[in-house]
Amino acid sequence: MNSTYDVIVLGAGAAGLMCAAEAGKRGRKVLVIDHAEKPGKKILISGGGRCNFTNIHTAPDRFLSANPHFAKSALSRYTPQDFLALVESHGIAWHEKTLGQLFCDGSARQIVELLLAECARGEVVVTCGETVRQVAHGDGRFTVTTDRQVAEAQALVVATGGPSISKMGASGFAYDLARQFGLKVVEPRPALVPLTLSGDDALFRDLSGVATDVVASCGKAAFREAALFTHRGLSGPAILQVSSYWRSGAPVAIDFLPQAGEGWLIAAKRESPRATLRSLLRAALPDRLADTLAERLALEGPLANATDAMLRAAEERLAAWTFLPNGTEGFAKAEVTIGGVSTAELSSKTMEAKRVPGLYVIGEAVDVTGWLGGYNFQWAWASAWAAAQAV
Image (cartoon, rainbow, N blue to C red):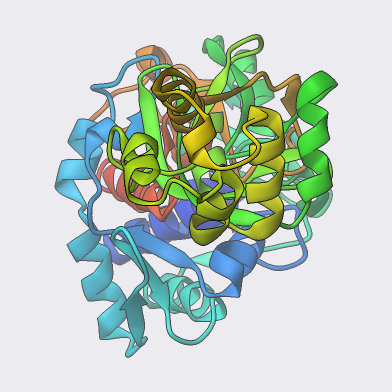
C-alpha cells in the first residue's frame, strides 16, 4: 500500500528542506527524499564550513538566467532579512565578512540543524539514503517509487540541484525528470569554477599559490576581488565570478593594479627616475607575480631610460592583461550550475510548471544562478518559500 502525502520533496538540500519546512508549517503533510546518507551535504561544506547563508545586497541583477526578470518575484517576497530573522530566532551568531556576505560564527552545521528543526516543527518526514527508481503521474497525483517505499502526493517539488560538486553525489537528475514531463532544459554548464590555461598563458602556472587583489572582467562583467594562480590556471573569487560569464574562446582581462590611477608610471618616472618597473611592481604585488609581469613587459633598467609611450603601453597592459582560457575545471570543481529547467516553463510566483499542475522546480535545478557570496543560498530560500506557499 502506498503512503500518502500532500507534498513530496525530492532533495534534502537548502531549497528542499526550506520548502518542506514552510509547507509543513502551513499544515501540509510532507515527505522529503534524498539519495545522500545525510541531509544538507552541500550546506556543510559551503563557506569554508561556515555557510555563507545569504547576501544583504541581493538583487535580481546579480543572477544569471535566460530570463533575467524571472527571479524578481521570489526574491522580493522572501528577502535576506527574512532568512536572517530565522537565523537569529535560532540563536545562531553570524557576521558579515565582505561585500554583504553573511556567515555563521560557528559552523555550517547550524544551518542544517535550523532547517531540520523547522521541518520537525511542521512534522515533515525526512528520509535519506534512498534512491528514486521511478516517478509517475496520473489522475492528478504523483507516485514516487524508491528502493524502500512507494509514496503518493498531489504536489511534487524537484529540489535536487545540478551536477556541480559531483563527488558529493550531485547529478542531472532534475533535468532528466523535467524532460520526462516535457519541460525544456537550458543547457547546463559549470559556473563559479576555476579557469584553465594553456599555451603562452601556461607560463603563469609557475605562480601557483600566488594571490592578489585584481579587477577581472569578461565582456561587460567585472569583479574586484582576489585572483589566485593555480597549477592549472586561474581561480580565486574574482575569477570564479567571471567564469559564470565566460564562454569558450572568450578572453578574460585582469587589471593587476586597480588602485593605480592613469599615468602612474609616467608620474613615477618624474618622481623617481632611477626606480625600475620591477621595484614598483614589487611594492604593490607579490614578488613572484611582480617579477613575472616585469619580465613579460621587458622594461628593464631605470624608468628614465624608457619613453613615455613605452610606459603608457606597459600601464595599459597591466590594466587589461588578457588571458585566453582553454576551458574550466568542470562540474567537479564548480560551485554551482548555470542553466537548468527553463524559466519559461515555470510560474515566477509559485515555481509551478505551467504545463504540469502540481509539479514544482526550485533552487539550483532552475535556470537561475547567482553570483558568488551567498546569492545562490538566497535563491534557494526564496524559490523554496514561493513554492511552499502554493503546494
